[in-house]
Structure formats: structure tokens, C-alpha cells
Length: 287
Image (cartoon, rainbow, N blue to C red; front, side, top):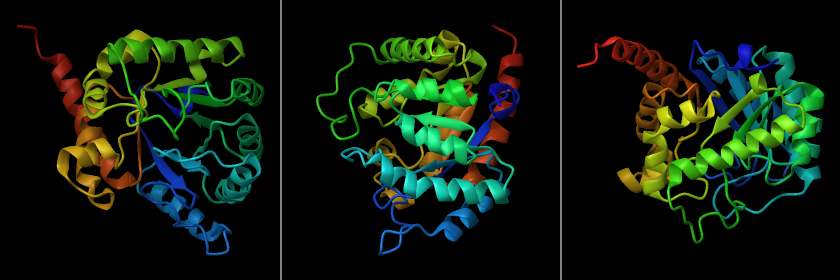
């Protein structure tokens, strides 16, 4: 399935996070037992609850990409995610996504029932991932990230963050296209929180309308509970839901086609209001 059904232009697609990791910054360890086994039933129940709350897509991750996180072996990532994807596919018709940078993990996940690959590295970590996506006929979300999560918050430098992110995402799009992924199955993500300062994250969020026009592709934004929101509000990660919804509201008003969140119910309501406001704004006569 391509963008036309999973990321249609006539709605804001709500992508719900479901991490089955021990160390993700917000929900790490929730579904990992003391013996390192995954609580599949708990993960499935939570994923289905997100769908009932209005999520359109469930994004399953088996490797933390928080600042400072180290890569995990392919076998570990597959062992965490594939059983959850297989079980979810039996319990919900919602499209499933695999949050991974690795071709082998993507291949296993797509075979298990995922229809989307969410690559925060924009194919810079493992270019073979694009070939896997093309072969499966899947949708690919291309995130922006310089470097790797281990080091991405060190020595951050952009001369002009918006045009540079747009240019680097365009290069990721071209890599995917050369591998055979059609444009209608591509989505871009400016990578809030991935190797950016507070000011750069704000510039990317405020510049979404321009970015979307430049790339002419659906744009996904993932501000959920991230540290730049904590820097603005002083809230710890577990208290950042109001700030997350505020960032989602701005993103949707400025044209984001999708938002990636930990809690779907509030995002659904934000999207409904802000899409209506955007339509009303577009109809206001120019002065």
C-alpha cells in the first residue's frame, strides 16, 4: 500500500509509538520483562488501545534512537519486534510500521506484516534498506539525521537549518527513488530532536509549510515528549504531553500530513481543530 491509502492528503495521519525496548527515553522498559523477554500480550493490548483512541498507524520500535543510545544487534532488534508485529497483525487492521535503520530488520518486519518502514537516518545508516522497501512494495518514511544517535547531539552545526535539512532530505528521496521506491510511497520527516539545538527544532517546526512545498511530499512530524519541549517548559519527560499537543497543533496548522505521538487521543482532537483552522485561514482574503 502506498501513500494514497496510508498517508492521504485529506487527513492528518496519527502515528502511535509502540516501543519494545528497555531504554527508549519515554517508554523504555514498559514491555520488557526482567529476563529480557517481550510482553507481547501487553504490547498488543496497548497497540490496539491506541487504534481505538484514533491512531491510524502503529510504529513498533526495537532499538532506542534517543540521544546517546547505542545500536543493538540485528538479531536482538528482530527478536523484540517481529513477534509483536505478527501478533498485532492478527488483532488490528491498522497499518503497522517498523521503526528501524537496518535492512535486515526491515525485511523481517515487512515479512511479519508491517507495511511501512520508518528510517530516522534517511537511508544514511544502511542504504540497502531502500532495496528491501522497494521489493516489498512498502511505504518509506525518511527521517533527517546527521551522524548516529550515539553522537548526534555533539558539535551540532547548521549554517541554515531549513534549507540544509530540505537538501539532505531531497538526497534521501533520490536514494530511495534510485532503489525503485515510487514517490507515492515516500514520506519525509525533518527529524525534530535528532541532532538539532532547541532553536533549530523550533525553526524546523515553524518552517514546515516551506519545507513541505520544497519537497512536495507528505511530511511527518514527531515532537512527542522530546527534550526541546522540556527545555521550553521545564517539564520532565512524563509531564510533556501538553507541550507535545501544542507542538502537534502548530505542525498540523502549518500543513503536517502526519504526527507521531505516544498518546493518540489528544492528537486526534488537535488534528481535527487545527485542520479546520488551517482551512479557514486559507480562505481568508489576502489584504
